[in-house]
Length: 459
Ligand code: GDP
Ligand code: ZN
Image (cartoon, rainbow, N blue to C red; front, side, top):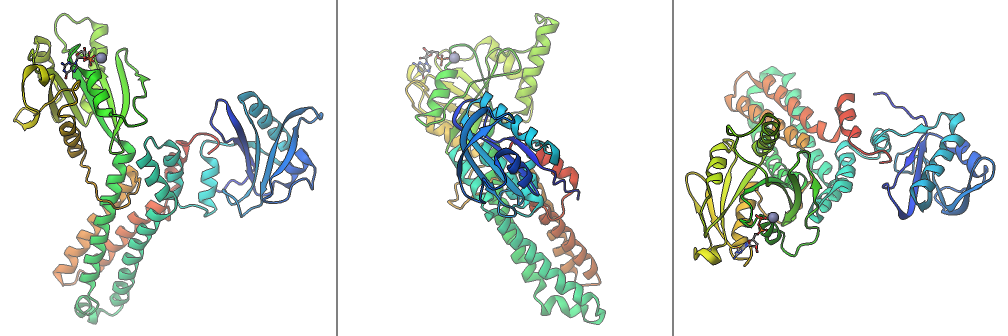
């Protein structure tokens, strides 16, 4: 693996204005940089020094705190210099430019996205799952997601995965020792209780998978498409679902003209709601330009986890609704929501029918909202376990799943109790490779590139 330890620098705090802002540099040896900026003896490792930040000609940029973390006792494992100035974009740009200039002779350059964390990984400060958790903690959109991310960052997820790896490794060693003494193969499975050990590992793996897939839900959330004619109560329903929770609605202008995404949360699970106010079925009265827009919107609908089709329980479905229902993409579950039951006189309830599950509620009167919430959680596959969850990524889930499949095949070979001990060993090896990829013991440069390029610069 190619480790580039040339010094790097970037603004580490979010763009915009704030009380303070931080410019961070990292490199094998930052002494020349520190000497150029402040003089050779100005900073002591791990001491906060209040100091003027000056241009090369002595003009003052800002006054702030400088901290030098001498490697390996730093985030990246290299020398790290943090300059905390006032958090304005121009101040920080000037400060960064000054740092780049002062370090030019030592090859200092602007950091790439995620490069600080990538170095922390390459210098064994974090494993890969922890490095991913850094990004997930920063990007967390709910409190529950943040909690699970910091759980992963602290190493709890890695520790669990490593325990699985240890289990598989131990079993492999046993088997491979036996392979050298073929006459004992038959007895081996009995004597060592290899099957029992395997069953224990499989059970532990299933538990981890459960916690990880629930955690993944906190990360990804549920993609919900809201469809309904004007005035059926879409906005009212969103507000009722969001309840009094904090972090309600963040309107994001969508890519298409009339698509709006809002995120609300139910029990900490983000619901990404796409309101397709303008959607209609394509018919002869649609021109080419409009057709493209409508097709794109229907494309979104096809990718949703669930469609909420809102209807007025008092007035019944309109002609437009019938057209829309006919155009629903197959395979996406539909909840048909009859709103305004306070006017129609229906009872609140959930009715699983062949065409869709029907839910009767009143958004405005907050009747039956809990039923809808529970139904959404059920579709999401959410089970509140009380156990700590790991904010796993798709990549982790796939690796866990693959490892499980190899263990299952190993179990089949063990069950045959014949000459298939080498196949048993091979499946164990493959399971181990899958598990190890989670924490990065066997990761390719390509994978690292994909993971770290999704960070912002400065992380
Ligand atoms: P949207 O156009 O689909 O977003 O509909 P709105 O949420 O803006 O609601 C349209 C109108 O219907 C508003 O006057 C709401 O107060 C009313 N409304 C929404 N839900 C209910 C309900 O459950 N019962 C009654 N009686 N009125 C409702
Ligand atoms: Zn509305």
